[in-house]
Image (cartoon, rainbow over all chains, first blue to last red):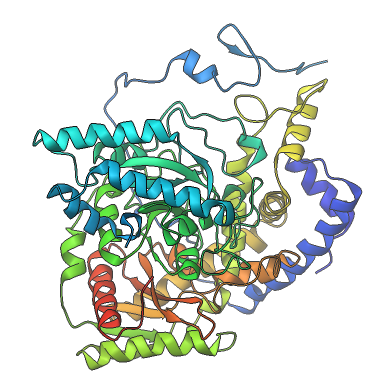
Length: 95
Length: 485
């Protein structure tokens, strides 16, 4: 299956990745090879098969409403690349 | 024999009867780390010697006073670096988490501490657990203790190498497509992938959430049962955790029951190294001679498992790894002017090539116009693979086959060909897709001395049967003189 550099650029944008020219070229080739392999799935007829998204036992999980102990703002922000008071600080969002 | 070379169960008995102190055990393991680590490089971080000895001393004092030291009392345990440890840096061997220090413990780490175990360090891995050789680590290269020119397997290669080199008594890894069992096989130790939901994933940094399970890497089956006993059981903090009683795994491993063994014909065919195949079949022969019934079974859709796995796991990974955006924790690129540039540059500079490749594949498979063709198709074939196992377990108690098609390969052999690396997991991914428990244990060596792994899978929640079979295989192999670490 042929994956063009344009396809790679489109997907990279969705995934918020910035790729170099060399990376784009390599990924186009490698993803093409992997998808060629994956296309073997088309040999199987799966018309009436239920999709299986996970192997967990399917039921909803509830807990009592309450205020379980959580970590403090300082503990939370200890790993933040940048902070201002009790907030995560990021560069400008809207011009 | 050095203390570090003994199994956890042996050391546990010796500590409890006062034959050795926890300090002596800890010293022996730390000395082994000093001696072997320059070559093996299993650890990303070993904790401070003085601090670890102080903790061992505290356990010795408790023991001397006749207090309960817990079922892992004083045992030195290594933890894979994608499992959160409070106050101890946890990086997933990725630059993007290079400076991350978790504010909490994973449930498994908390349970180890409550059982008296002492965490001695964090082990190397393929970045975000994506790989089968630990060569995708963004930090260092781990070598196979049996042959330093070869890989330890992956992605829990650091944990496997640490246990095999006696640099830890036991270790934890995580298994999304074989990442505990495959390195265990390549390093000649025991590795378990529990039933999906048996062990809490709280605090395990997510890769493929519908497939990930934490499991033990140990020197023998009893040790695996011991560590499984500690980490298993319901956790309200993980909504996929199963609320069911945990059987006495240690007792199961000692049971002598004649089981029906199924050999899937698809896993003994093309691509299997003849020495590996023979070693596994010889072990099955021992079971048959000891009274087990051996039948052939079929997993007709197993040949599609790698294709299904790479769609499901990468789709989940692309979504799980969206959280690394440079905002809340982890790496942030410098000198960015706006938020989108911050996302893009932080991710591009922080992730390594294999992680990018899988994010790209997963994003592609989930993107508009391709979702049905790839993700939905894969989810349906996953169902077929799961049904194959149900049909097989109607005919047998356990399914046995080699863990890997080949023994440990040379460093660099597969790094240029992602697909060849993916195929290392061809015999292990099916258990993750179906959510069933499986164990790998060593069953012999190749003529050049490399360990060979035998894989036992049981039905959903069938750890009891899995440990019975593994214990029996291990005893028969020991009697026949087929394996010694």
